[in-house]
Picture 1 (spheres, rainbow, N blue to C red):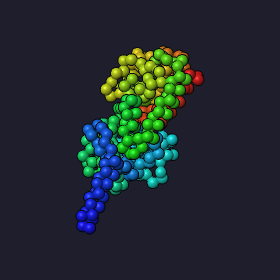
Picture 2 (cartoon, helix red, strand yellow):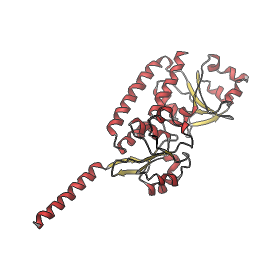
Picture 3 (tube, one colour):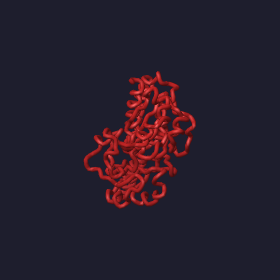
Length: 300
């Protein structure tokens, strides 16, 4: 009877180990190999793109770095969130105290912004380090796939990414008449215009849709502050302006002769879009909304 009892205990332990191994997930993130032993339920996301990926597979984080302004999240993202999520401050300097108080079992952090506090974050909860700020469009899709695996929604994420691919193909087809025509996106602030290169996230979306960002903007920072003279040098056929403020530098430029010399101005190919969505949000949903914005170029 003692031998039988011991066998039961050993067998139970083996079953426990097998169950533990089955639920563990290992992926490669910006810090190396990342392993999580169980499906996380309380997730803190420190970038908008991570929130986009999570809600795309029906997961609502308990904490979000929303820059202390929930309106910076896409409306389509906000409506998928549960009512009890909490702001953990800005993306650049999230509050470690607030994060810890939420008792997360997973933190998703940005390689660019949060590597310096990675050790502190890891003391609070397992921390998945992925690119978001200055990431490319393709990097974003790779990060979304990793997030899907880590949160136990790999099948759902693969299905969503397939759907996204199909949608982007349809948008590209609708934009085929603009193939090869230079399209430039830039953010208009009060005192500066930041042109986004082909290496930027939105530049990648533009290329994915079969359009062409202007050459001459290669920049490791993905965007560059340019003057009106430099904009004229690029001289895109289509100019997409992401407004950050109501009275931006573009409003000032409109009174200058050089502005009138732009071929996009002469052809009335200036389009104003939500700068927050185009420059800050990034993600599966964001890219699809950006594509819908670009459809206005062919409808004009």
